[in-house]
Image (cartoon, rainbow, N blue to C red; front, side, top):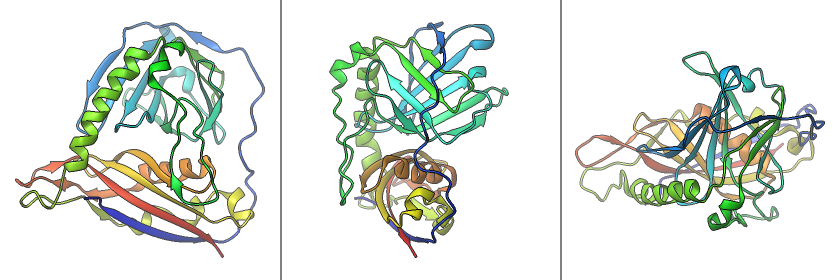
Length: 292
């Protein structure tokens, strides 16, 4: 069973905040070599591969997390090179694949280290038609080709471009994929009401999750309406830990905006198994923005 919830938001035409972020001027990257082997960990709601790059003040930790069978990742970078990000987007590039832009959340760890997280990261820019509601994404990437990926480059809103010598990545992405496939089956069954007294996750104050201000200004100014359906992974604490776009009819930064807002604000009473114990599960949510 899928637990769905829909929201319809009306947005007045907003003052111009600009469209897609302009590509920043090129600068010499900070290149960091591996300082540890890859480590893998399986959580109740996600699978994580982590590795440390560089040393001293440049030391940077990379987390690549997968929350389902699809090769869609949460990407987290932790370290001083990520301090004081400014701007709307981070440009990401895996190996020699084309560069693409992602929205991000900037935080600080409990140890005072800068943290930068991007949700719904793909290896290549997804190919999507945007004139109607269609399944998404068409990735155009075979994990079997990932040994050709040996670097991860990020630039844009950070002080200095960063290049991590991450690869080759076949084993890493393969391990994440196997873990994600297993997790997908578990999360898809968690909280099924047919399993005795089990219950699905219940939204808490969902009318506060998104506001008209979340609608990208460049779409509102163009009077373009948008709709997408996402799959949230809800952990046993009732918080969203992953956001996967199922359908969308607008540019990808629209998807990023919605996912980031939901990751920040969505709250739930978590799913429970037949014994009443909170469990991680999936939650499907449809958003439609209309301009008035």
